[in-house]
Amino acid sequence: MDNNVYFKILKCFGAKGTRFTTEDLARELGTSKRTVYAYFSSKDEMIEKTIDFVFTEITQSDTDILEDAELSVQEKIRLYFQNIPDAYSIGTIIRHMDDLQRYYPRLYEKVNHHLDTIWDGVIELVKEGMNHQELRKVDTVILKLMLNETLRKLLDYEYIANHPVSFESGIKAMSDIVLYGLMKEKFVKD
Image (cartoon, rainbow, N blue to C red):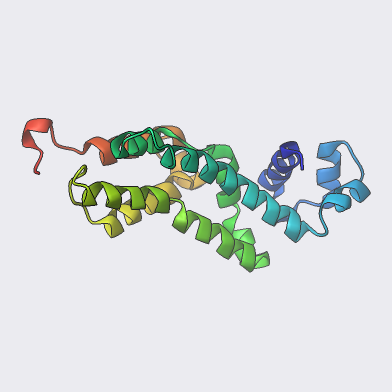
């Protein structure tokens, strides 16, 4: 299926949440409702496939980095954190999580599962780096908690609106803190 369809669904979803209609989508696509139903059997399926599309896009680019055998563990981690996902796509879904929870609880759980596992690849890489003594020991449970909660906050439209930070600048700041810490080098504890 053409990726443009998913971007149009995201546009409709962003404008109206789960209340967008098949007619809204057909209008966006410049086609008929019948044609929309040739691709999707229900609105539930439209939303689910769009969620899958958004998270597949994110995880595929991360996987490409993590599986590059020519990169060291430290290079992979640095590139992973520099690989900032598209805030619009994921943010559109997150902004309407209340609607998903109320009307599509299965899809709400699916989004939460994606968000809870989005950092798993880099966490495994950090463990590998620690085992090979390429990285200093850290508590990976706490690291994952920090990453998860920061991501969720940066995807929270109200939080971003009330703080002088954008999704991209927040992810970059978080990445810099994780990669380089707070202390200047002469004070870093081994």
